[in-house]
Image 1: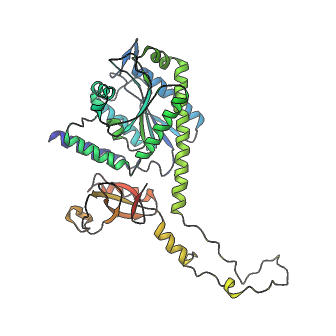
Image 2: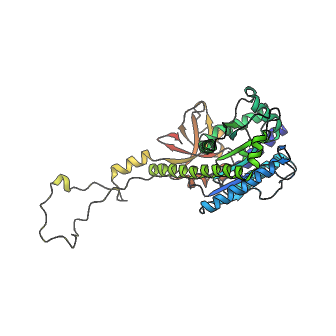
Image 3: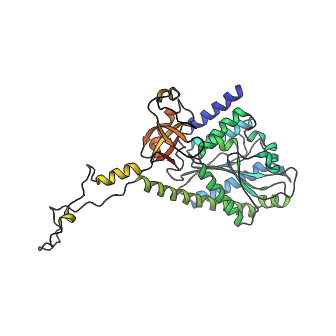
Length: 399
């Protein structure tokens, strides 16, 4: 019971503290948080006289400097710039890194690590992890990774923990899960251009990614247990190439987000209809002789609303525009809006539909933009800690 309570409190705390950063793609990429994995009393993997924590820090600082120079409009925040840890408790240390990212209002979180395989010196390649779950028991490599980094993962064999983590994973499909995966794919794409062995994207229940309320990745730049890769990732030239690949991925990701915003904005904004020129004020440059009178059908102006928008356009815009609301519950079956489970929001919720097993979504509020909806989340989370913003169009959840 105590363990479940701890997980629940962590879940609520993460959601509550992340209000400033949850609107992480609606305003573009303005803040990038770079996390050098491990540090201080947590050295990470150690091979050939090298400690992973130092490799991670070297690359994190190089990447940050490259972004600061090449993307001056983006603010770079580091979880650490020196060899230090945040707590003698590893779980608290991981949470502290996420807290730094969340308080900074991060729009993208990049955690840099080096890999190792204790049973194979031949294993090599690069991979990028995102929040999710895979069947660890079906993969020897992933099982070994889990066995050697247990404290960094949630124990999904515990049913109470697994239920909460899986609920969070499900929510990602309606928040920023897509963006994390896009960033991961871009990173792997640019690694491949260097000729590195592409081990792909892996979904793992990592604590540090769970606690960050923004698109987040953890990238493994190579295997320290492989002497050839160790030499590469500790060399100046190797680090420069890898950091260059990460930087290229960041630039591509920023452009992807910009394009997404353009699409979303165009969906939200009604098309402005040109108003007919005033009939009583002829243009000064117009000749004295007036043109022939137009047929009545062409001369009749479109009826307008008080805002000058055509009545037909206003109606269409209202029904087809993307709106934002705060989801407080999902169900496999329909729930009455006056159900007692809605507490203070009983009778005030509305139902929208989505694909998947939990197709009935129950929400509060109706807003024209994500920022306005997000501003209400802190208050809603007092009753429903798991509440988050979703986009809705024509009564259905949309990405």
